Amino acid sequence: MNTTNFFKKALLLIALVGMTMSFAACGDNNDDPDPYQLDNTRTAIITQYVNGVVVPTYRSLADQAIDLATQCEELRNNPTQSKVNECCQTWISARKYWELSEAFLFGAAADYNIDPHIDSWPLQKSQLDNILANRSLIQALDEEGAAADAFATLGYGLLGFHAVEYVLFRDGAPRNVNEISEAELIYNAAVAQDLANQTARLEASWAGMNNISSAKRALLEEFELEPSLNYGENMINAGMTGNTLYKTQLAAMEQIMTGASDISDEVGNTKITDPVNSGNVLDVESWYSWNSIADFTDNIRSVRNAYYGSLDGTVNSNSMASYMHRVNAGLDQDVRNAIDNAIKEVSTMPAPFRNHLSKSETQRAVDACNELLDALDAAIEGLN
Image (cartoon, rainbow, N blue to C red):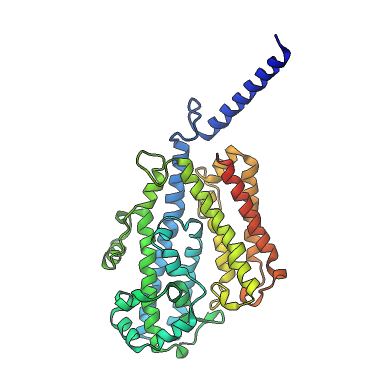
């Protein structure tokens, strides 16, 4: 026998055995190594992501936003300092859940423009001041709230979290109730109601209309915001015949990882870097409340939640982390280490962020976010 051919065949056999073992580790049927075949392990991972991370996060967000809307309406009708303080605390709670959702800004948040609708910044302050001086518009909001026709003409930079923040906060603390005008109270109540509507739509879009409270269903029906697609069900059914959004389960898993990658990029290279480069405090997200660093840190925690398949920092057995550990333990460890480091570096930036817009004080956090971005992108490549 030709010795060269013998060794070539031996090497080929070893390679084929290695490929078979690798594919088998990705599925639960060693007789079916096709990574594009429907697979119970991947189904469990995607299901846990939807039902264990996305839906409960959006549910908590909607609950807090609805409470905020109720409190802002009470503040409008009976302005007291204690009510301002209560609204501020609920704003911070709702804000936390929104930031914890930013690793999954695809789906309903993008398709219905909910992300820009409720979280555009910087706030268009000069335009907002003009609106507050517009008596006819304020009267319409006073009479009809978020249902007023005039409300639909407002741009995204005049709505959402940051418009409410502007009315409620000054210099990182609850605003003095005596400094809040009647027009601001009316506007704030309408915007807070719109924020509640949009967050309820997020929950319904991923959980399904039948799996939200009757009060939320009534709210969405009143404002004609019922979702046209069950995004959670669609993702869980990835790879099934007729699923045009996720033709394979790997496509859904790549979407999970890409969502995490995108927000890692945004935190480091936009949310932190842009205001540092401009030196303009108006470019800082959540600067009226001084909540910026908490925002950024919760964004990285949203990456952890998406990757770990949990809300408490533990690694669920049905998670992208567990899957990647089987596929490539080295890549998985890189992602875990990068998550921990990014949380540490971002959370320990000098506070408040708006007063420390220098590269020397923020570069470690930016570098950590980019290291996380690189680790996630490598893991995405490692899925195939």
